[in-house]
Image (cartoon, rainbow, N blue to C red; front, side, top):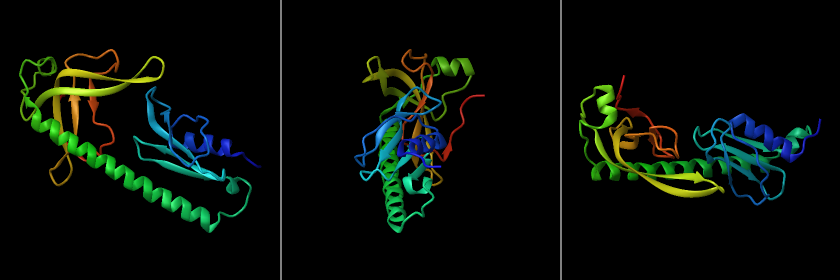
Length: 204
């Protein structure tokens, strides 16, 4: 059974948990949503300019799926296809590492610039937890508003919980808000594009 490149792209998107959208065959990644989230931008779809294949990528899980038109036609994958997929995988891995390192630098900066958390924070009072090794500060977040436009919101008096790698270096932060912002509909957040390996447990 023959499949079009669109059919293969749809299957690849479903495999990695992102929403399929029509994108141009320009060899560039285009943002889409996760299947289980309304937030746009955490999925990526790319079509190669030769219309013989592409990539579906879930930015949150790191899962990716390459697809090629000749596979659906029962033809063998060429060496050129393999090299293209390998190069794309290496490029994507390097991009992810770069993003994770940038997020780690931001996490360390937010942690250093924060101040010791107050025991009067609503979350700490609710959980009856002392503010041990917890800091507080402002939290910036880009959200998708009406009309598919992005806007930045700033949430004040946010608890900052450090998350470490196995070497004890801060690589990410968990933010706990004093109230639930209407734009997010949740009271917790993490820095995007960060790798979480180890974290301080807070709450019960």
